[in-house]
Length: 390
Ligand code: GDP
Ligand code: MN
Figure 1 (cartoon, protein in one colour):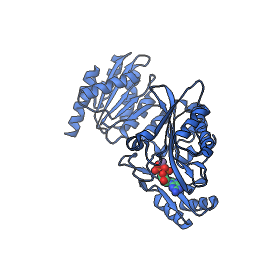
Figure 2 (cartoon, helix red, strand yellow; figure 1 turned 45 degrees about the horizontal axis):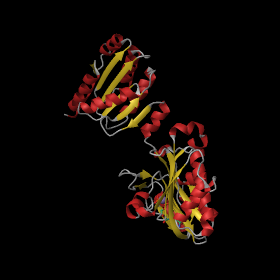
Figure 3 (spheres, rainbow, N blue to C red; figure 1 turned 30 degrees about the horizontal axis):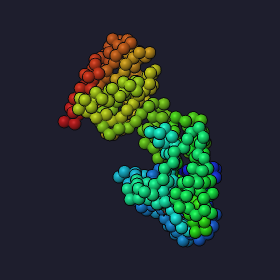
Figure 4 (cartoon, rainbow, N blue to C red; figure 1 turned 180 degrees about the vertical axis):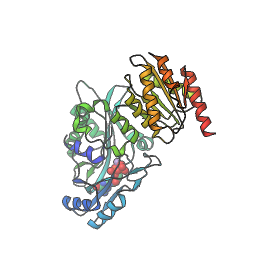
């Protein structure tokens, strides 16, 4: 799960990382109010979307009067911001962060990532902040400093000092840098993060070290024990179908193809997707409805798959072990009657009570295409789809 810049800053501030004064705004009036509250004569109005590279896309505006703050807020709110990380569809801006503008002397980069090869947290830092780390890696590869954290010991102060010296910080600021690095590391561990990135981390003209931008991502499987992180989830930033699936308790991942899949068991779902590809089709989704697929779960899965406009044929593939095919068949028939799918539907049932399940499908009077084997099911759904598009 990702969170917004302002949320990441608030969390990091709790671990001793210094940030500029700022506040969230949902309207131009609130933005002006925030600016007045912050004080000073210059502010930065920043679009809050789950994407970096907002600056280049016009999502970060420096303002020198309350009127400019109002205009910037008006221009950004409700606007679709297209950065090269969002893809061409962009993201609509619903929230703003208004911040005190700070005089920047130097822009640095620091990132904490999980390095799978060393199975450790790795710190990546560079004296060339303000641009994306991929770009730094290309243009200034020698400026990148890496430090691996020993999990049994944690990040030690000497490692943090080494990073500070490698970035060329003046001696007077080394301790501040150490505070920032230790704070980020503690936040990473104590909040079950998978990524912490501050870009830029700036040295101000008055020798402070401030996080001007912040990005954090978290381990979804640990959210149950981090309620204060879990509540930061912004559903507006997520694929609406994946959010809906989470609500239904279904395991759904949207894909690019056009064959909707409803399957029980992750392994069978993977195998089915392979078979669809083998038959010349492309799956529109991965969907595991789980072991005890009740008629209600089947109906919810139907709704989810059909809400994807790309879907031009559907495949239900259920292997009933603990479950019963007749029960699943009832669910399928009920869902098909209720939702009247606009696309051909192929059903393959196998396992417990399969004969009874097939009979229910056959006698339903619905235009459901049956298949006995997985290969047959994949062939039939691809053929059915082609029949539709022809
Ligand atoms: P990103 O483009 O999404 O990564 O957004 P950032 O928060 O990193 O902002 C982009 C750039 O705007 C920064 O690299 C800075 O150069 C500039 N910027 C952001 N805040 C300030 C500020 O308070 N003062 C000044 N002078 N520049 C700022
Ligand atoms: Mn940034």
